[in-house]
Structures are given as structure tokens and as C-alpha cells.
Image (cartoon, rainbow over all chains, first blue to last red; front, side, top):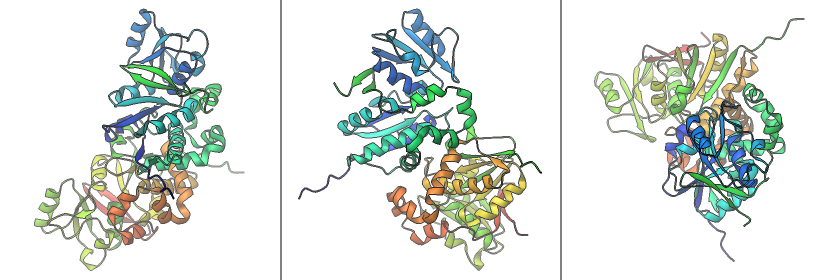
Length: 247
Length: 247
């Protein structure tokens, strides 16, 4: 009888960009998550044919790219900023105008988290939009995984933790990963409680004012719908490019 | 008919001392939590008649107090340090030798968290040992509450989060508190899942190596047993003193 495979790689969840330094590892893949809405928008853009996305820290940098002919998205606190055609709504990253384009993007939480982890050996972007494809891509890589939640202004937030739990569960189910990380285990537990109806769960269990403030029912529902894309946005020399898991 | 009372005060949970600055509020009571084992030991000491506990940052400071005739506890990574009679095992803080004494204490996570929040308008110490009394004391105070988890080397840990969930639930049940905080809501959910058997839950859901490393079955069980004391350790001029809720 063949011995069962012993899980070799770890999955860890970091709840805040401010704690990321505690999770830095020489040989891990970092998955950056900002469910509402930056990483959901980024995954959407690649599904709709974007050539690359350049995550930048400031509105000024993004506008400079725009002057050079790039598309540019600029969002702060859920609102499209002056001088930009769009912010971080995934619905802005669909359609013909996206195809083949390079897009500069700056957002309140998501691009900041990408910036903090940009020196990781490998950095990818995750969301419910590419959940299954991302899990398969990570399992295939056979490396340790750190899921970095962008959070809400450096605080823990429920939606990024839910996604972390969903991804953790898929990785653990492969039997190639183990978790020694309490935050991964807590996320996994919260996701199992919520999975039947993520939207309903978030309505009752998450910071209602913050979600209501977003006032984006359609976006929220879209961002919680798994597996709408098989693209994995991978950071290559300061640009995210899409790797298609199905290719 | 009398209108139902509208909850006025907030309860928030901070998962790491490194995030505490995001939670600092001018008029909140901070509850410092380090279930394994510093805050459980502190609550135990007051139940056994300690006069005060002086939380200090370094082993050297604690030893200096010892030279001056104080009792002194010194722990790092679960181990009693050289020159100290005891570390942070609650069982060291029981009995006649504790009665009426002033005790200097330094631990890996717990006293560090107290130090970080020492300028809060009011700082108290919580553990399962004084759970119900602490909840009543806080409800009676009618102020916002921030629960500060000492965590494990600045990371989220399961046991401090479980306690945060237990305390959050008691505060919310009083109808004098509301929660707009995702980490409070997540803690509350994890506690509700685990409450039937906290020990079993931690054995399956927490970082096993870390708990096994502690090798302290008896301590762990004691620290998870609620309501063994009615004392609230309150910080007054750099010393913790015990306020008896029943008095």
C-alpha cells in the first residue's frame, strides 16, 4: 500500500499589511487579497483581456501613466478620484476598452498591500473571481503560501478573511499543505460557517456602515461570486500580468 | 411601552499589539488579554490576595524589584527565567506566599501588551478566570471597550480571540454595546463554534506545535475554566491592583 502523502508546505494568513513583516519568507508565494474591490477588479481585467496592470501607490503616479497613454484607475475610500475614468469597481474593467491595454491602478488598500509585499519571491493576486484556478496554480507550484489580506485601513476585515478561509480550505484539501497558523485556521472556520450564503453572512456579520457606505450592492454580489476567471495575475517586474491556468 | 435601549458603546477587538495604535481612543477602556498565560496568572494572583502586580518590560527590571524584596515572575517563551522563582503559570500565583505581596512580572507577550496600552484612559486585565465579573464591571462603566489581544509574538492567536469572542458576546447581550468591528464579530463567531469544549477546539484548531511546546496540559485546562475569580486587575500608576466586583 502506498503511504499517504505528508503535507510539505504551509499556508499562513496575514490579517493586516502592518503585520506582513512577521510573515516574510524567503521561499513563499504571497497572495494579495482585497475582495472589495481591488483584487476582484484586477482579476476581472485579465479575464477581459488586459495586457498588464501596474499597481502604483499614489494618485499622482497613476495620473502620470495616464498622461503617457495608459488607462488609469484611481480610487480612495470607495470613490473614483478626480482625473480618473474609473476606480476599483470590477464593472469598469469589463469590455472592449480593456482588451490589450496596460492599466495603472491605485486604490486605498489593495495596491498598498501589493506594494508592501512586492519583494516577495513570487506575488500573485487572489479573489473569489479566480478562486479555483488560483488554488490549482498554487498546488501545482509546491511552495509555501502566505495570504496577505489588504484589510480595511490596516485592520482585519471579514471579506478578505472569508476568501483566505476559502483558499486555505482548497489548499488543505489537496493534502499538499498543512496549517500551523491560527489565523488560517480561524479564517477557514469562519468561511465554513458563511459559505452557504456569503452575502447574507456579510450583511449580518460585517461592519454594516462600511458596507452600506460602499453602496455597491451589485459590486459586492459580483465580488463574492467564485470562479468567473481562470487568470492568475502574477507580478513581473512591477507589472501584473495574467497567467491563464487553463492554457 | 418603554422603548428598547439603543446600544451606545462600542466593543472592538485588536488582534495584535502592533495594530493597537489603530484602536487608540480617548475615552475607551482597554482590556488586555493573554490567555496562555500571563493575564490568567494575574487574575489568579488577585484572587489569592496579591496586593499589586507591577508589569515590567525586561527581566532586569523584574530582578531589580526582586532585590528590593518584591516577589518576581520572569517568563520568556513559556520558560521560567534564571533568577526567578516562577514564570507565568497560574499555579505559581496561588497560596499563602502571594497574600498581601507586591509582585513584579515580565512575560513574552502579556506584559508587553500592557506596556503598549499603558496610556489608555483605563486599562484592565481579562481572562476566562474573571470573565463574568469583568463583563459586569465593563457594562457598569458605560464606556467604549477595546479588547487588546497579546497574541503570539505579535501574531493573531486562537485562545486570545476565543476570549475576546466570549467577552464580546456578554457585552452585546447587555444591549448597552454594539459592534461595528469585524474582528469582534469574527471572534464572537469563533467562540460560539468553540464554546461547548474550548480545550477540544483548541487541540484541533490551534497551532498544535505551539500548544504542545507549552507542555502544560494542567495550565491550559485551568486557563480555559471561566469564572474562578471576581477580581478585576486595574492599572493604577503603573501597578495593577485588584478591584473586587462583588465588594
